[in-house]
Amino acid sequence: MKIIYISVLFFLTISCCSTKQNESSIKKNEITENQLKERTQFQIIYSSSYGGYDEFTHLIVENSTDLNREIDKLNILNEISSINEVDFKTNAILFLHLGQKNTGGYKIEIEKIEKLNDELVIYSNSVTPSKGENVTMALTNPYCVAIIPKAKKYSIK
Image (cartoon, one colour):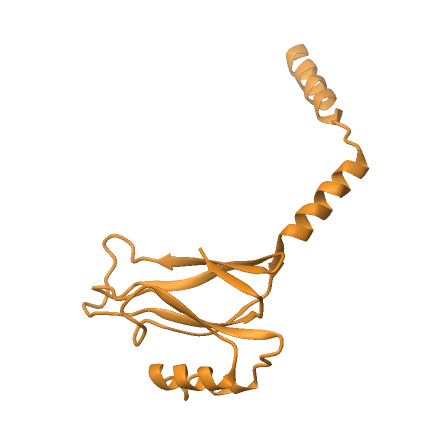
């Protein structure tokens, strides 16, 4: 019984200990990280397994003329009718294509977007079907369409 009391007292003593850091250095580190990396909001407005391009690629559209041309190529005007309300002064449209796949079950998503100074870094994630999962036996071309903030430079990772 004494061992249990001693153990509890020991763990309580250890848990009360803390390491002190200089608050100004913590705030300075947070400010520089926040200035370099700023998580940015985005909105996926459409995603499909069929109709995308045959290669892994992306297209960033910054005006309504190019947007209408791309919507016509993909034949998705009925699916995203509200896309014409996008303010191209502050936003752009990202078309992200995974490429041709042999079966269904594939998908491409945007994981997160970070703004690093003047560059917008877009992290994509490709979802693959699980082993043994029942999938469509057809060629698919997954892609997604998202509204992203406008930037001087873009990179996809």
